[in-house]
Length: 369
Image (tube, rainbow, N blue to C red; front, side, top):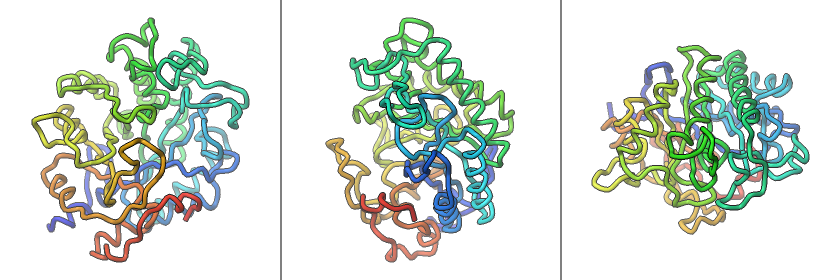
C-alpha cells in the first residue's frame, strides 16, 4: 500500500465501516431557509459523497430547544419537515456510497435575541455568559439543563431512525457544552460547576442520554477543542495526565470516536512529544480519533491574530499527514476548506490530480455548490 493510498483504503472501525479515512469536517453554511435542509443542501452533500468523502459530518444542526440556534438559516434536527429534509440528504449520500453523521449543536450563550426560531429568547449558558465575565444571557436552571439533555437525546434517536450512520456531539469552540467545560464561562457553584471534572457533568449526562436512546452499537462521536472562538489560546488541560482525567469519563459514558479540533494538525499538543491532540487522545483513551486543522491547505483557517478575515488557502502537501496516519497516531482525517473549494477533493487527491485543485477563498462561502 502506498503512502497516498493509506488515506483512501477502506477501514473498519470499532462500530463503523468506511470506504476510506477522509472525513468532511462540519462547516456552518446557512443555506437552510426555515431551518430545513432543501434541494441545494441535498445536492451539496451528495456531491461530496460522489467526490470520494468516506464520512460526512454535517454542518452544526440544532437540537430541538428554544435557544439552540444563534445564526439565521441553519438547519435543525427537530420537527417533521427538517427531519424529512435530512432524510433526503442521508439517502443521497448513501446512494453515492458514503456515510454521514449529523453534528448535534446548541450554541448556548452565543445566541442573541431575535434569531429564528426562538424570537426574543436570550442565550442560554451555564452562568449567563458567552464571553468571560460578561453576563448577557440566561443562566441555566436545573430544569433548563434537563430540557437540553432531553433535546440532544431525542435528536440522536431521530437521527438514527432516519438512517444516519452515527451522531456527533458538538462540544467544541466555545458553544454551549464547551461553555460548561471552560472555567471562564462556567462560574456555577452547583454540581455542574467547580473543577473540570464537575464542569464536565453536563456533557457526560448528554452522552449517557444519547447512548441510552441509540443503543450500544450505534457510533457516538464527540468533537472537542482546547481553543475557543472567544479566545484562541484557551486551554482546558495542560498535561497528558489532565487530558486522561478529562476524557476517560467520556469513554465510560459511551463516546466511540473523539474528533479533536485544532487549528493546525501538525502542532504538537504537549512539550516533549510530536503527537498532536488527536494523537494524544488516541494514546491515552484507546479510542479512535479524527484529526483536523488546515488539512490540504497551506495556511491557517484563521489568521494567528484571531481575526475572521478568512484567507485564501492554496493546496498543500499531505506527506507529513500521511506519515502520521501510517504511524497510527489517529484513525481518520477531517478536511474542511479544501472540500468547500473542491467537492471532488478526495478523488482528485487519491488519483494524483492535485494540480487541478482549486484554492479556497472566503468568497466561496457566498454560494453552496
